[in-house]
Length: 164
Image 1 (cartoon, helix red, strand yellow):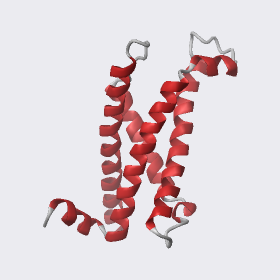
Image 2 (tube, helix red, strand yellow):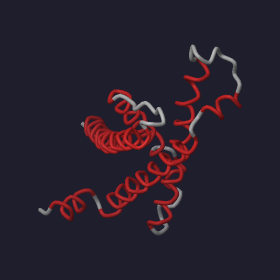
Image 3 (cartoon, rainbow, N blue to C red):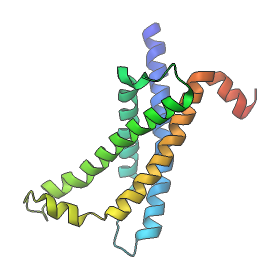
Image 4 (cartoon, rainbow, N blue to C red):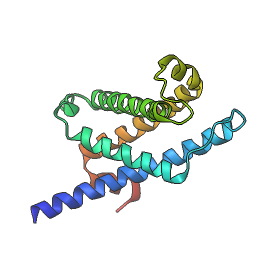
């Protein structure tokens, strides 16, 4: 029975994280599309956005179970929010670089030259950094509400936001 409750809690948590990131990744994808369609930036499909949201939800679940994630649990809330936001943002940065680098490395058009300088020159870094700033804001909001829910409890959070 305890195992079932634990599994139910984890599935509910991963669903909420997935849904949160799915909504905001879709919005960011639309913003990228509208702002940069003249620059030749191709938008991600909804399936690609959903896979990215699922990947980030899985990363959040894994990182939340690491021992160093709660390093500032006994400190004021701002420390924990800053720590977790920074960790998630760095991991997301690495995942985004890998998402851009793997197709370049194994793509048919690259011919597997392995030329890192060509990869660096090919990526639109202004767009990449601006989207990364969106993700930083998104992660800050997510972690703030996550930490608030942990500190005051999910039932009190629900009552504060939605009433009874």
